[in-house]
Length: 106
Length: 455
Picture: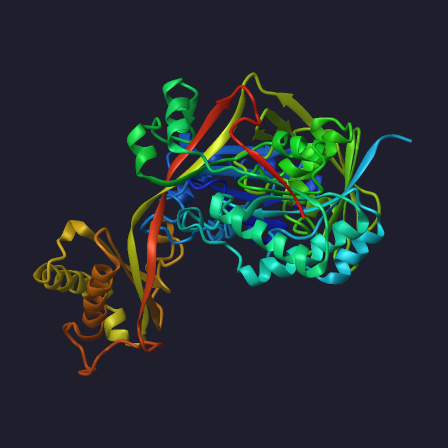
């Protein structure tokens, strides 16, 4: 068992336009990426649970060529609206860091 | 030898700065075009609404002076999209004015094109009436009332207006709101290169050296050829790696593989990232899928009110232990006292942001119940009436954060730490995004008038 922050090379969040937040996780190499992908832990349902959004609002895309996963979902409020806490959306990645990635048999 | 174009981007945004040595190292590699992105929607609705620049005029002028001198001396075009941060009329005017001043002061001569992106309300309504405006990401259909209520609306141009300006002999092209890669795509497609590597190159160049490590605001040199793109930072302290490029390819887009742009979609599903040295990366395998209809994004903002804010903090565990009750008492006091001087509860919003608890993630904070030893607060009031009223309500909130009583309180003086005197800050008008739509165009240049001048 490892935590995502110990396995990933990049874990970040950012706006994708003023109404959506996008979270990226990138791995060093194909082997690590495929191992994590095989666990199935990173998926739309995980982001729905961590960020309290309906799963159907999560666009989850593995990007094999870049050894990366991307999840995009609505912001809590549009960027800059009353109550927004993070105009750039770049401090919303922390809940992912401690996600447990189980060992897989190879 | 196959066709190629060599492009030098100086930074992520005009005014972010770059080392002069990096610019010189880029010029030594004989670029065909030099440029930089001028802005972004990312800093929020304020800049489009207020007409003010996102970077300071002092910082913009410093970068612009170095770039204009470099371009004129090398005899190459210089292109800047989304001038002044938001790319509306006042932003373009600001940067154009600086270019004129620098040309005069430094004895530079060139033909300059200014490409407008701000949209007048009547033409927007005509586009809506013709059924050619569609909402993006769960936005409502664009109503005339929304257009009327909006302070400013810009359209985000594609490469075509840049192509037109460069074809007409402009050496310096300053544009309003543009898709970040658009100016670079224009340069590459004019050189006869296909759209797929041109758009990919633009996506790398729009952020300067951001696709390198260590990350920083610096220059990026990109060579575009028929079937690939090569990226290398000009500062020897930085390098591009397959990972740093792959990471940047995910930047600010909802999908990592489908990038919707004016006129088509860049498909990066099958890209390959190969190191060609320890500092340069070659990317190949990108595809361009032409859209059935040519569309540009519309961005607009409307006035939401006037904001005043105040920063304070507590180190009192007795207060921290009953914070929710305390805040609700403060809110009650503010509501009645503000109503007493004429601020009706529906005319303002009071925010009490709690840093150290959920100030960054709000309702998405998983550790909200952790007990901290100190907490920071940002009090804010947005009044729909006036700045004066926002400050009046905020003053009442500040006083009540300081003095409102609670059971078990031992500190019988004011019970809140204020770092500043004065404690309250008038922020000014507040805007919110009101238009986030796409407009279909028959002619990609038509909404973007181009003006030429000889300097």
